[in-house]
Image 1 (cartoon, rainbow, N blue to C red):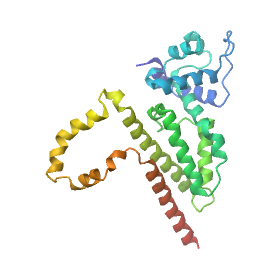
Image 2 (tube, helix red, strand yellow):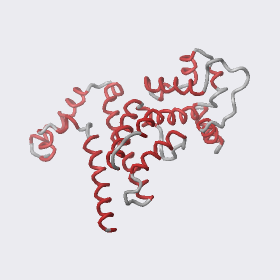
Image 3 (spheres, rainbow, N blue to C red):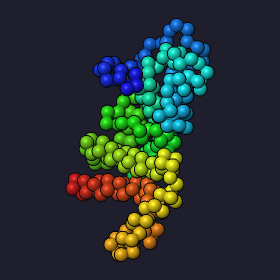
Image 4 (cartoon, rainbow, N blue to C red):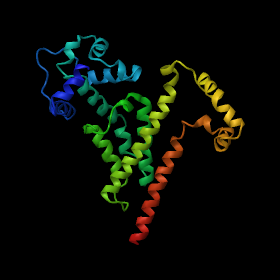
Length: 258
């Protein structure tokens, strides 16, 4: 087991506190002669660039240090370990769209739609984000501000606070789920060593006879219409349906109160 993962299991809340201190700017300044020009922000950006190019599997303090032209041990003066670094990376990428998110105009639908599109674009820029468990998200300043912006989009439209949060969570869950499937499909050839053409050709050897025999009428109908050609491109359809569903709830709530 990697040293950072072992530490995370044995030091209780200490690792969580270290990440939060770094994200919220309350960590002590590094000592013992830090290299000029090196900073937490510089290290985090180098780590993001590496993860964008090669995925989280390639992320190591040694690789990041090499990219920055320093010794690996010098990084530990700024960031205690890989687990804390990944938390910092996640919060940093949430900062990328905050300025534009703050300026979106329109009603709740336009503003919440913009949040969904920005999250979708974030995953396409940083696919490694989908490899990080979010059951217990680290509450950094940028991720919290992003959530606050989304909540503002549905504030004052007749929803309870629980429903406001539910709307944001459902939208985010849809975006993350479809992004994961879409990116996995995009990366499948490299991951498996099998091209898309070969993948479908092999499967058609087994599925084809069932189609010819008429055993799969609905799948045949959908396939002949070309729907499978875009089966991983359903973001637009799904986004609008999530918003439609929320719109129905808002209308019913308004009618009931009226």
